[in-house]
Image (spheres, helix red, strand yellow):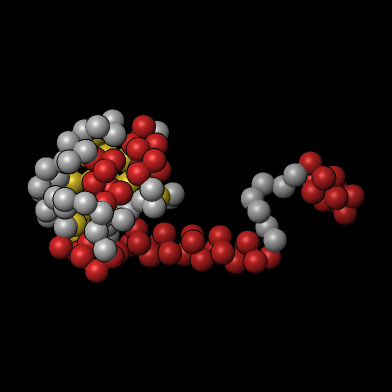
Length: 120
């Protein structure tokens, strides 16, 4: 099965287009190597997906025939990401959610910078 289809089928991406685009943008590795969306996946391969700021890693246990229900995903793939990395990812996501609630959307705009300069 193609890598883009596989990572979509095991519900790591919402759409097949997103999974294909992430492969093309070098956000997916197969056995430590960046790959094209058409690369074939086999059993016992290691898949790494970039989720800023970490790489989430998975081991292929089986190849599904089509998209799986959420309950069946554990029969086809196992996550091998370290606990430290998962904890770091959780903290960053919590911080981003809190910033969003406060109205912070990332870098300040030109208007925001001018307002900050007026305060100083």
